[in-house]
Length: 514
Image (tube, rainbow, N blue to C red; front, side):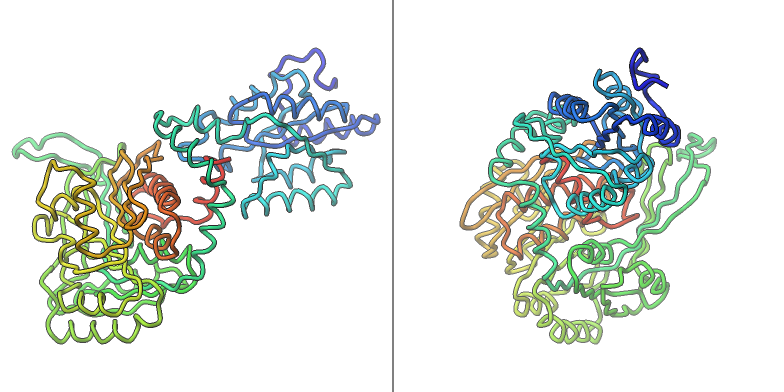
């Protein structure tokens, strides 16, 4: 078997198992083998130089391309599938063989293929925490097979971040923002900032909500009624509302508390407890004459298009004895936490008396007052006299100020001044977010979402993580960046099927910043 000479580029592509056999034969004949590994989303000049450098130190250059299954990067990646990426690499003259990886990272490929030298670019060693762990695993594998490591210095600015910017499907304003952001912050800076959140002790207060998705195929209009008929396929339940906010926070912080109400009937308590992360400590108030809130959505399965929503709810305020119990619980627990996040869905848990306790006792209070079908027009942020951090959608700001078309920045400043709020974030969907820092002024951050599966729960994920950033005093531009990266992750998840992953956030940050 030749080592790439006179072979078409497609003939260079082998499975890992085939390649192990081929390389064993070449090794027996005394050939020296170099191995490179990466995702190779874009084949730029820096990578071509890497392959050329590998060829200078070996007879055979083998490249293992990261599988789509294990591809980690910016939202919407990979753009090109593993087969196309392998073909592009195989077309480079200095590359002898290409395989698509079977495992995440290069460590196992090193053990199976047993190269004499493993080649990395210096740029590949820029370490966030997770990338450093991967490099450590590679170095152990290199020692295990008796290989050496060669690091290639390359002055070209050809980082994956530029590929994300060019090919990531982002509009021009995102590229401009990222170029400006990189001048002040690296992926390691953002990773370090996220790591700082671990020390926070966080209490979440808000209504527990069960999100139920009922999936079906549309059959068409009923023959005898002006309604849409569905053929039932399946259903699933997600822990939503304050429950999922607690789970979001729990992946970033060690100590998390949750105070919420369950219905006296149909409590779903076993389901809720079973869907809370281990480091979330719940306290339940039981609301008489009410079920635990269920928001049932009927969904056309193919496009995940929501057709109808039905609430099981009693949104009357808590009764006096229930309210007193909640207030006493808050007074007891709030001193144990650095941050209190009030997720006020307007369904009867957070009464004026409860607001007084939150505002007087919390050392750092983060608030969202969500508008929804059950409270639209009756529920705004003006219920709270103060907050340290406020996170609202633009529509919630305008409803509170009764101003549909006025200058948004003026409205936000007026709101922040009235509430003596240190930081205010206004989310604007596909237009990103606007932040107002009482000392530093306004900051804008674009949206990073490329693929939107479902918007349900995205606001809760942004509230959860941005509240931590605000409490830790991160710079506003970094708070906006991290929060919008979280939002981009959230809209790829159906409802609240799974909470935000800190690990995936870090990988996405490394992918988009390089």
